[in-house]
Length: 71
Image (cartoon, rainbow, N blue to C red; front, side, top):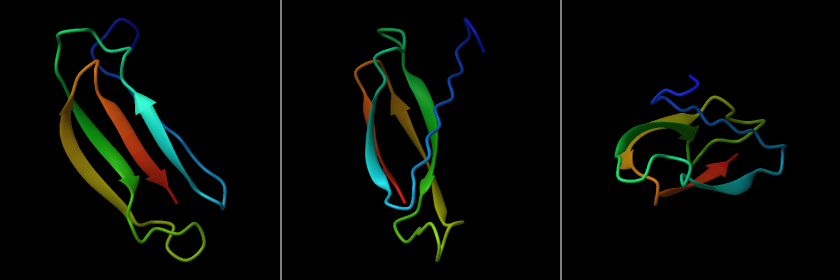
């Protein structure tokens, strides 16, 4: 929502997958947020196991980065 405290980030990859690093430097400095991360599971595969995912929660701030593996 524009001007709000909720942010949504999404990404997809092709059949080759990739690792994505996201800087959260757009967040307000000095403020802590709770990130709910829906990500491909370690055994996810675009053809053989496309629905495998994990859900994690972590505190983040404007100095945080997220490194995600896209299957």
